[in-house]
Each structure stands twice: as structure tokens, then as C-alpha cells.
Length: 408
Image 1: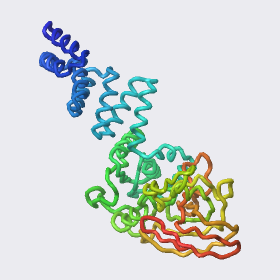
Image 2: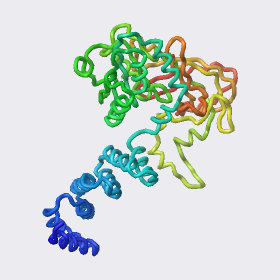
Image 3: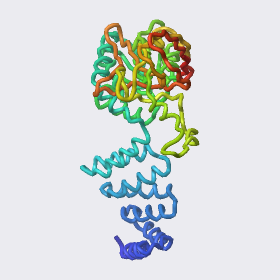
Image 4: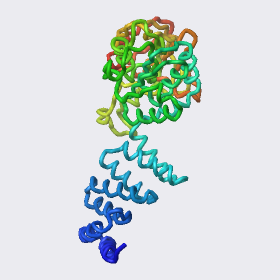
């Protein structure tokens, strides 16, 4: 390090300490011409760029810091902050994960990484993967259905778990689609770590955008998928499976799950209505806040099929719709069901759950789930809330066109 560099760097840090960033920058840039790989100098320049709101330049400087000296802990934090501000949240997550791995037991880094991850992705990925009953039922069905030489399609692969199950069961190859690019890359990493990269190809796009002959070489013998939300249909399951049937699967292709049944029961639950529509609170009129409501979006119920201090089950369960995933599949539907009223009360909402018929032997139900299940029932409030009389048969009309419309 030359004397000229030392003097320029000293002058720059003096001005920086005084908050005179323009003067500091001038000296730092002269020093940079003498030693472009000086990590602390690049760090100072990154900080000056942040002060000047030049976040693209700050990103460049902080990346240079870490390239020169990957032990500069604060550079990871500053780089992640800049990337987050620039909307490059996935890149910020990668930076924080690298920092977390390098600097063990750094709870602040773990917290920051978790905060970024929670803004990027829904929180159900890990609980779903930890749901052992779900995993075991799926694997049993996949093992029973895969035949040697099968080419298998996996829609919404996530971690790649179902794709790896199919490969282990004897599939010749699995083509796994994942719409979220970063999750797709994580799946590739997981699959490679498990020694199955030659058996599973991950394609980072939605399966409905797949090009036959380009993304996959041929139509597939079998589909595995788990793109179901708490009311079965909300993650685009119906259009995705219908598209696969028409474009990506051979005639008579096997599907895991083979089908599903969506059920409902009428409940009285005043607080669910209040969650969607507010009037007076503690003597104040808050009705203007109802512009924020989304009453036709079902929510996690946090209730079960048995009465509780918070809700009453008013009807027998009724079948809303049965689906056969191995036959042409409707993406919208209208059905009529009949239920018996078993208790008088006001129908505030419909409790929803489903059964996945994974194969002839294996059924996964989301009704009254155990604490170690990631599944929960859903609840859809009713816009009209009739008073029900016990013992009276009740017709329930269900329309689905991307959302549920229940009419009693």
C-alpha cells in the first residue's frame, strides 16, 4: 500500500466522519484508482453511494467488498439492505443466507434472512414438508402407481419432494414444473444433493406455459401434483390439471391424486362475519374501513367440525363437488347439494374441507386435522345469513368461477 494511497484514504475517512460525503468521495475515488481491490475503501464508497441514494452504485461497491474480503460481515448486511430497496429480494435472501452460513450463531442475520424470506414466499412450505402423514400417503400412492420406464410430470414441484419420490419409485424421468424461479433453483439444489439430477429436470415456469418438444420431449405417462390450498381449488389446481390433461399427458395417464371430494357444513359464527364486515366498535362508526374487506375470499377457519364456544355446527356435512383428475376436468362449476339442519341458528359461514383420493388405497383428509398436520379447514362467509330451523332439509347451490358463490 503506497503512501499516496494511505494519505488519500486518510483524507477521505476524515471527511466521511464529518458527514462531508462529497469531499470524502473525491478522495476515495482517487485512492480507488491506486488500489481497486481495497475492501474497506470499497465499503466506504458503498456507504457514500447509499447516502447519495445511488443504490445501484452501492450494490456494485458492496459486491466488490465481498469479492475482495468475504469476512467483512457488515458488507453482507449493507448489500442485502440495498438489494431489498432495489426490489431484488431474492438476491438479498441469497446474500443473507451466505452470511448466516459464514457467521454462525448470528441471530440478527437469521432474523433478517427470515424477514426477507417471509416477504418473498408464503409460510407454508416448511410446515407442508414436515407433514409426515401427507408425505407418507403421497409416497405410498406414488410407489403403487409408477411403472418402470414412466415419464412423469410434476406440477408445482416446490422442494422437488414428489418428483424425487417418483424417481425413486422407478420413473425413467420426471419433468418438474415450478413457477417461482428461486424455488425452482432450490429444488434443483435439493435434487442434486440427493443424487437424482440425472432423473429429474426442473423447469422454472408455470406448467400451463410448457412447450411440448422444448420443455418436455414427449407427453407423460403420469402426473403427480400437490397444488391444493385449504379449500382445494384456490392455487389454480383445476386449470393446471385440465391443461396437463389436454396438452402434456398421454391418454389414460395415471394421476396422483386420482381425484378429490370437497365438503362443507353450515356454521353459526358471528366473529367470522365481523372479520369481514365492521360497523360500530366501542361506540365509533368504523364502517368506512369495509372498503378493505374481501368477503368472497375464504380464510383459514381455525375451527373444527365439532361445536366450540366460538361456533355451532348447524348442518350435516354435504358434498359440494367430486373431481376425477383422470378425466376431463371442469375449471368452473355449479352444483346443488342438500343438507339437513341439525341445530337452529343463523348460517354465518360454510366450513370447508376436502379428501384427496391419492389412489385406491390412500386417502388424505383435511377434516379436523391433527396438530402436526399443516392442513386446516377453510371458512367462507355467507353474504346472506338465513335463520335455519332444525330438521329442515336445505338446498345449497354452489357456483365456482375462481371464487365460491354459495346460495341457500
